[in-house]
Amino acid sequence: AALRRLLLDMPATFPVPILVVQHIARGFVGGLASWLGANLALGVVVAREGDTLRRGVVHLAPDDRHLGVTVDPTTGEGRVALLDLPPVGGFRPSATTLFESAAAAYGGGLVACVLSGMGRDGVDGLAAVRRAGGRVFAQDEGSSVVFGMAQEAMRAGAVDELLPLDMLGRRLGELVEDDG
Image (cartoon, rainbow, N blue to C red; front, side):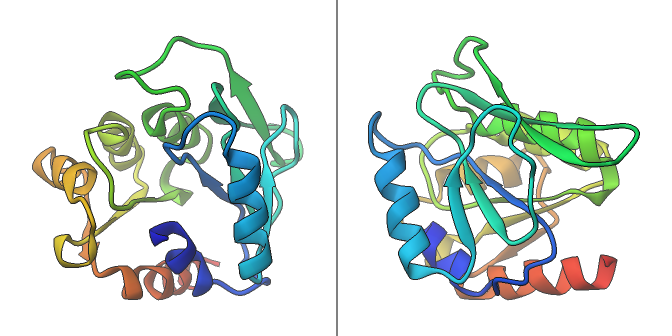
């Protein structure tokens, strides 16, 4: 529900691709993609190896594969890279793997966000985003069902802004528009 709420604030013309790792039971990511796609202006797909990252499209990590990105050095075109690496902190897909891959690909042009959830998946990746010059946002405690992941990211000093869920989508949109 938090992911849906965040994405509702983003128009179909959102100028960048969105990549998502959602901790969800195996076999449900296709249903999540369908549900989100039916409720959002954005396109929603389950990521496949080599897919082009397209603006205004949400790319969900598939079951049991890490989601990463590569950028063609000649064209600058981003592509999905699905990785069969071991689980990170017990998770595959792992938010840490996505954030580290995206930080390496996009550096200071990356904006990352962590929402309500348990544990600390993503924290090390968010630190990589910050080291690369990217921006990191997190959902605040008051609007979170479980404040664990965002709280761990805050404790690690990996968050630039902590915002209520109903403000995160707008803030991300403002930042993307400001950066062109």
